[in-house]
Image 1 (tube, rainbow, N blue to C red):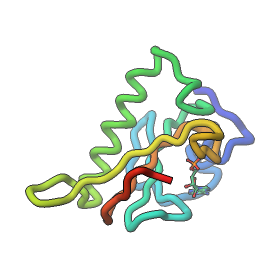
Image 2 (cartoon, rainbow, N blue to C red):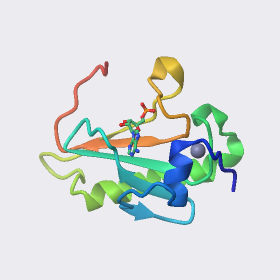
Image 3 (spheres, protein in one colour):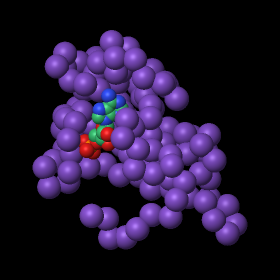
Length: 121
Ligand code: AMP
Ligand code: ZN
């Protein structure tokens, strides 16, 4: 599995930097964002290093699907399921400088627990 030894999220994936591992498969890990922007703010990462979404190829489609499926499982675990009259969440993948990406390891933000604004900043 490709790992970047200078990468924060690779260190989190390997366990070198400890985090609360909320959900995990052989390929994907979910943990709380250290600076939460909503009552629920969880990051989902592939354990394999990809610098951003644009570093993925069509071959990574199953992995990207696993990330989305994992996000739905975690959202349900966090009580964010859509239900009659409410619920739901937002998924965000900041990509590149204009996208606001600050950590160069692909990650998906799961945000919920409050109503989200639109358009985003
Ligand atoms: P982005 O700006 O989309 O690249 O998101 C990076 C996210 O990583 C930010 O929301 C940070 O708060 C979060 N973050 C940075 N360092 C850590 C850490 N050690 N543990 C958990 N989340 C972190
Ligand atoms: Zn990495």
